[in-house]
Length: 317
Image 1 (cartoon, rainbow, N blue to C red):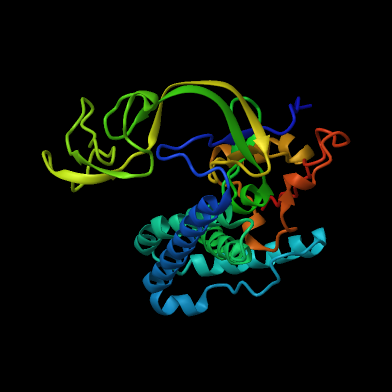
Image 2 (cartoon, rainbow, N blue to C red):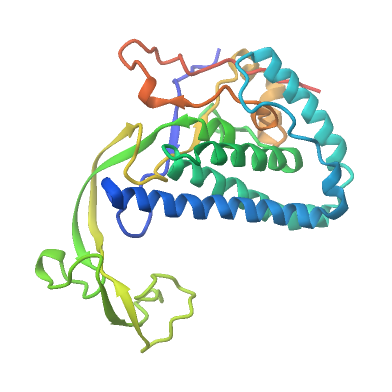
């Protein structure tokens, strides 16, 4: 019998760049701007996939079901039907074309998930929800959604539907110094006002990164003067703790991977072998979801560690 250790998560905690506003109208504008931009990217990349498919796009399996379905059997029936349709369609597409399509559909999925993280309390929330389902449906149909098995004895998944619908994030308790992006001094020791623009000369640091955009490849020429927004850059960062929260300050500080409980099926050697070979797939992207699982609705005091571990059906054929 496998010793199950409960649900495990891999989370994105921080990203390079300015600290998002903590609240108020500035945060609302921040979330709206980046949410709309992400939603547009998801749409553009999906449209590119359809363009690449050409006349074949008219024959892809239809996403012709309601996005939310609470009946487990109905969801599973839809997943099986759509899996069969995608297997038939995918076999007609040339490998070279699939190679061209893959980066675009993956970017569409990623951008749609970002859009939801920015827009979860926005009128465009459902548009982002639909964008995730649409892109994930195609990605799973053409490229699968692998469930992996690791040496620690656990199965893991980064399924877009499973990951994005568990609405929680992380907040890190950090201690750090903050340096000015213009002069490099500690914020408390410099005269620059944060979020104002100042001229700065483009140079390359010891790692070859541009002092304007922090990229190794960019269009900024050494010696060029550019107007740059002053912001506080964290350095000497020390993490004291990381907490799960319903609404993280960093909108993209979210789960990127989670352990996957297959129940008794996970102990079957055939299932483990399929996972190791990369041919065991999650079907969650192929049908309706159960709606969002909001952390803000959780009753933490009464919830057991296995409440979220729903037994998964695996078809072996």
